[in-house]
Length: 274
Image (tube, rainbow, N blue to C red; front, side, top):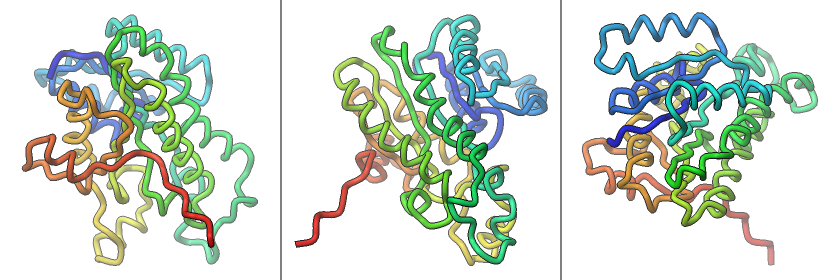
């Protein structure tokens, strides 16, 4: 892979950490952004002595705030020399929204979620991506990669406001891709395609997956092969697509794996009843 500069939000743990390390391993200079201070020391310790350690930079930022998003962009300019790749992976999940989700007798309804939680989830999961994206057109080549979720997580009862925030990012991907067509900047989605084995996954869901009562959880490293494809020159004409890691076959050539695993980003409305 050509040497590029990348920001990975939510890049200090879980899916984001795997993607940040995967990009750095392939030669990219990476700014991994997270919101938990102790994660910085952990990732720096884990990469000590690795050949790519000097290409990975960690930063703590609160992406709910506009000025913090500006600080992330400024840090990327100062430490890396600009931004070629932006991976919008940061997300507040159900362990934040409803920690007792699997222990409560009834599901949490949207009117039971506090205003603070709704605002924080929408700001982190969607608005931060919108704030970080402007300015990437100036380099004449770039990649924005958004991480959304499964449709049945977006629209299933009891998933508010997480599902709504990811649905917004899904539709933004489709719109942004249309608006950047022919500019050298592409906008695509890389998703787990199922629940992911990350710190944000509830232990109850891990147990159900282990026992076969729920689908297999996707491992963070499974995100890396589709990510490396969409940020490569091989994908210069891939714009407005969605790739789910659980459908990606890393044994195939990347273009073939992409052909089998990809579909257009966004949604199709059901036809009106006759």
